[in-house]
Each structure stands twice: as structure tokens, then as C-alpha cells.
Image (cartoon, rainbow, N blue to C red; front, side, top):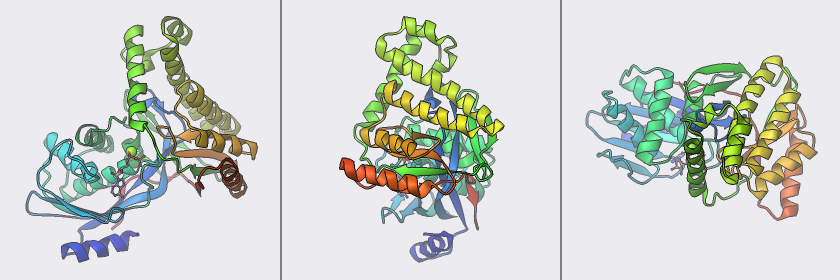
Length: 376
Ligand code: ADP
Ligand code: MG
């Protein structure tokens, strides 16, 4: 559904045209997985697929949300953290803004998103950041882009109740076309790093493995808990602060040691990837991506058979590098491939999935795109 269509649906549903239409994209993390909540580094870029939102203010304290994907229109008149339903991702943004003292009144919204739900491309941040930018414009709120992302994270953490880091919201809000966003999750410093694939004769291929996420929430909580235990043992506030990995490993039990090794080496891989991109050394970037996957598979234990098969097949069919992206236990795999070879690589993954008896994956190309913006 495009911009004109959300505006038309808005007019039909709510009896007046919207005041504007805004979009906020999903994201792919090039590298830096499970580093955000450890105060580390991430390197996401925004994808062309975005949430599109038509909106207008209301004179009362009511928020009406329509989603084209759920087909539902719901009305919220009391903002209660922990309230169930998809609308909490949106109402939570209103709540987070009001918690900070921003004057936000009622509003009507029509949402339609191209970001697949629950595939690790951050459909949740896309819809939060779309509501955030719309409310900032409609109510003339004075928040910089980082503050917007941080309050969307507050919405997801405290209102929805999902314990996620800042990466997704920062990417959706702050990314710029042709760049990856280098984010230091401890200082919140950001840098736009050129990701000029076309000039290098390269493309990024994404394969959504369509693996049903099982036990994801419990596993995520368990990984975070292991990191917290390791920090206690090591006497550091965050795993970001571990400077001597070997010394740390000598102090930690086997399981915590492997979790820490992933986080510490992954942070270094993000730094090395940023340096590689600046040098235009995409062979090195590819190797770092593949090393990141191995670390997620062996040390952090967050991959599953479908994503491992996708990565192996992509590498065997010529990719410079490939890795799972997102929290894990399914979701998407991305590969750096030579321009013109994406179809061959995607076909190879499809064939390998069929041979293994896995359901058909969905592939698409991803180019680094713009962050949240008003379109009309
Ligand atoms: P991801 O962000 O990786 O896609 P999450 O589990 O964080 O996965 O967020 C997915 C949830 O976000 C959905 O279950 C739904 O509640 C909400 N959501 C995302 N996009 C939409 C949409 N277009 N309409 C309604 N709800 C949506
Ligand atoms: Mg999400």
C-alpha cells in the first residue's frame, strides 16, 4: 500500500483527509549482533521497505489506530503500560512522549507497512518511528533524532514490555541513503559510514528463511542474563568494558566465557568492518560477516539449521560473506554478492532448502536507504 492509498483509507475511515503522510523504514544489521545491550557497536542500514503512516490530530485524548496488515481499527483512550495487542507499539510512543513531559494530544492513524512482521527486519521499530515522526510534526515537538529513537525504545521496553536495545529505532530514525549507521550503544555517538555497493560492483542479497520463531523471547532473556552474570564476575558495568579477553575467559565458567567471547570479538568485527568500508576493502568486510556468523553459531548459539544452511549455500555459490542478521533463531540472512549474481545465489538457497525439506525462503535485494521522513 503506497502513500496515496493510506491517505485514501484514512479519509474513508475517519471522514477527513490526513494532515500528512510519513514513512519510517525497517533495517538490516550489517554486523554487530547482541552487542547493543552490552554497550557495544552496531552497524545497521535502513532498507527500502518501510511503514507508511497517514495521521491527523484530534481535539480529545483518544488515539485511533488502523493497520492494513491486521485489518483492525482500534481505539485507545487510556495509556496503560503492558496493554496487549499490536497497537501498544504505537500507543507506547504517545505514552513515552507524555512521560517526558511533551504535550501530545489525541490523533488518528492509518498504518500500512512493507516490512515483514517478525522477520528480524524490525517491523516494530518502523511503526514506532513512523508514529514518532508524525507526532513530532503534528504537535511541533522539539526532539532531536537521537531523542526520538530513545523514546521509541522506551515505548518498546516499558510499554510493550520487549527488552530490546537502541539499534532498531536508531536505524529507522537516523539512517541516510547510501550509508550504514555506526552506532556506539554506550555513548550513543553515531557516524554515517558510506556503503557504496554499486561502485564496488556488489549487491546485498537478503534471504528471509521464514523460520517460525520458537522460544525466542526466553532465549533472548537467557543471553542477556548470561551477559549480566559475566559482568558481575568480571566486575565491569558492561561487556563493552572487557579489554583483555583472555584474562576474562580465565575467570568465567565455560558457558559465560563463550557468550563473552562472542560479544567482545563481535565488537571488534564491527570496528574492523567500519575500517574496511572506509578503505573500500569489501573482501575483508565479507570475511568479517562470515566470522560473525560462526561466532553467533558456535559461541552465542543463536542460529538454527535453516539460517546455517542459507549461509553455507550462499558462501558456496560465490558470496564474499554471509551471516544471519537480527536477534536469531530464524529470521533473515544477508550476503555480500557480486552484482548480477544475486539470482544465482538465491536460487541455490531455494534449491538447498527444498532438498533439506525446509519451507521456501523469500529473497530480495537491499540497498541502504533513507531513514524516517515526511512524504506529504
Ligand atoms: P520485528 O521487529 O523483527 O519485525 P517484533 O516481534 O519486534 O519483530 O515486532 C513485530 C510486532 O510488531 C508484530 O507482532 C506486531 O505486533 C507489530 N507490528 C509490526 N508491523 C505491524 C503492522 N504493520 N501492523 C500491526 N502491527 C505491526
Ligand atoms: Mg522488533
